Each structure stands twice: as structure tokens, then as C-alpha cells.
Image (cartoon, rainbow, N blue to C red; front, top):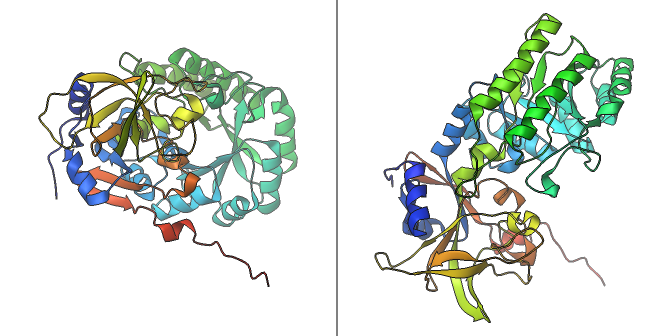
Length: 434
């Protein structure tokens, strides 16, 4: 069945005004629940396409698939002109299943990591994938398998910034990248192995602001000049901010691109040849497309707190418990049309953990959310949940993984079936003990 799709901004604005939501990407929530059950993740394909298009000023938009790696989402990104980043053998496999070629110019798939595990090194070598090396050891290991490899290197510039200490990927507390003071010896090590360093990549953290992201431009320029005129690619990395709350600053893509384009032009002048400018967004492309739909299964008061307890928990969406991350929420009532007063509630899940609370700040401090009065059987929609939602899901408490649904052109498609109880124990066995 196909439904008409109003703009994401229209729907979001209406939901924020009333704290109720009746549809996602034009599809009634009741219809989604009837077809696919709860909990489920729903993604709006149009939002992902819009976010990719907003970055078209960059030469290459390379999707950091760790944010949401369903092969249907990867296929959608590919069809809209994005290339892809992979951080594991599994992500390489996903990219290939989604139709990305192993080689090309620019490389359709780039393996970016701080190590090679043995499986990923085998795949990279067999498929001749381009590698963005986050350690000098990776260069050594690749050169043992692939003669005279051309690589890019990820450099830790000595500073970082993110929306949480756990998402800060620069500075001496971070494991990521080659330490900037060790660049020269890394280049010498690469040359001794016959490797050619053709690009510089710096990423300081997820959720950085424009000021901190702008500092990366200067770092990349200085580092690229040290690498020399063999550099043909620079990467702005990812970390683009997403507005989770009303009033949060939106990304000024034009201003950000202008900073990077000026950097690129100065490097082109210094090197005497073109330099390709890449950007590597993950969360920015998919966060706003995604919704976690869960059913209210219990409502109870504990002293001064009123709890809405859902059939989804941090096994489905870990960002609040990991980072104290905020997600806007709305009620999707089964019985529409009733006037429902707003009230302060704590929204939690079913897990046997006190930390299984969606409304918490950093450090686990419980906060309240204003939501309409609900009844058991109503649904809560946790919004802006497309990034690091399903991708970080687990089977904790032996909970099956949720279904994933993609809405495209007003039609919902099941892109991952809900895990069954048999799926939970697949591969396990009881050894013969006697």
C-alpha cells in the first residue's frame, strides 16, 4: 500500500507542537504497527536522499556506514551518489551486497580503521580495496600482502571535540589515527615498504560544532604539506552536527564547504595539481530519517515520577544510556482525536537494568519528558533515531533484534525481519558431557 508523503519538516513541526504523531513519512503509524509489530525502526528514504544532496558541493560524499548499515540503506546511498566507508570485514561484505564495486576512482569502498583484524586484511588484499590507515602497523601489514600499495592515512591532530567524551576522536586520550608528531617517521616507514601516501584524513569527533570542525582545515593543510605533493585527496572526516533539540544549531554546509574549499585550493596551488575533497558523514545522513516505534506496556507511579514503560529498551537504542543523549519523543495514540493533557513522564524500557531509561542525561541523571497522557497499548515514537540505533542493538536479556522498515515513495518495505527466538540461539549448542 502506498501513502502520500508530507514533508519531514511539516510532520516534525506538527509533532513538536502537540507531542503527538500519527504518521511517519506519510504512512499511518497504526498501519506500520499492524504490518510489522513493535519495536521497529522506520527510516524515511527521502530524508537520506536530501541529506546526501545537501553535501553535493564536496567532490565525494562517503557514507560512514557504521551509523546505520542495513544493506537497503547502503543501496539507497549508492543510488543517490554516495560512496562508502567500511571499518570491518562485515562492513566490506555489506557494501559489496549493496552494489558497491571494490575498485574505482574515486574508490567506491575505503577501509578505514586503526587495525586490520585477520579477516579484514584478507578481504582488503583479495579485493584490492583502498585503505585509510590509522596506524603505521597497518601500512606494514598491507604492504606484506599488496605490493606498493597506495594509501591514505588518518592522523590524530592532537585535539578533538564531540558531543560526549566518548565520541571525541582526537587528542592524546583517543586511540584513533596516527599521532601527528609521528607523521615523519610513519612516512619513512611507508616509503621503506614501498607504500605511497596519497591522502590525508582527520576526524576529531561526532557532534562537533563549526568552530571546532573549522580547526581541522588548518590541521589538514599543515599535515598535507608535510606529506608532500603526492597528496591527491584530503578528507574532512565526519562529525557534522545534527539538531536533536529545538533551537540546536543546524549545519551551515555552505560555510563549512567554503572553509574546506579554500584549504583545498591552497594545497592545489602548492602541489601544482588537483586535490579531491571528500567528506565522510554518518550520523548526518541518517539520524533524522529514523524513528523507533515502541508500545507502551505499563504505566506506573514511583513516588514523584510517572513512568511509561515500553517494549523497547537500550538493547534497541543505546545512545541515552551510553552518552546521556537526548531524543525527541511523541505519543502515537491508538485512539485518535481525544484531547490529551501533557504531563511529565520518565520513559523506560523492559530490561532488568536501572539504566534502561530513555530520558536520562550524561552520568545517568534521570530527567522528565513532556508527553500526552497515554494508555497501555498506545505507542511512543522516539525520533531522530536513524543513527547508532539499530547499528548498536544487542540481544541483552535475550531480546530479539527489532524489525527495520524503509519508507520510499509512500510505500513501507520490510528491510530486516524481526529476529525470532530460534534466531537468538542459532549457532549455540550444548556439548555432550557424558
